[in-house]
Length: 210
Image (cartoon, rainbow, N blue to C red; front, side, top):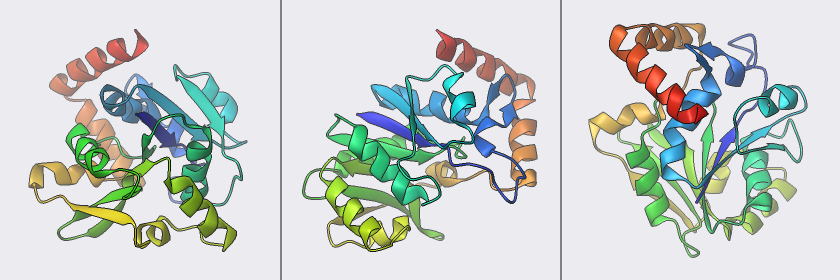
């Protein structure tokens, strides 16, 4: 299985590129990749012309340029599916530092050629477009949506062949949280500043760099 991290670009609410925000001794996108890596064979980042050079300087298996920058996350998914050799692939946003491997396992376990797109559903917040598990067979569906001018992952997940998994365990709900605002970012940094978090972060950094 290949894991794709969509690096996006400048955030209007954050005032800069979220993927490259410093968080402890790493960047936000590296924190996401550390959580994703145990579940996949390869981690691939999809960037854009504004951040591609900086992303390629990080310890990443591969960095791809979005096939059509500015077309949103659906184009990022299409870019990944056009480059992958894995039957099942997982896509996640670069601003989800709390992603839980158990959620990835649940979604990827239900993903197959006749259910080529699988996402989670929060019991209170509803459909969660990321993380998203996609079978290689989803490439044609995504391409057809883009050709019709669609850019939304929700349009993809409303397709009759999409699968939705109810995530009912409260301990897994934080996996869907995003760093969308300066307050979210401050909270993440504060959590990693505690002695226990610093020790865990240092251990993850060392494993990542090895």
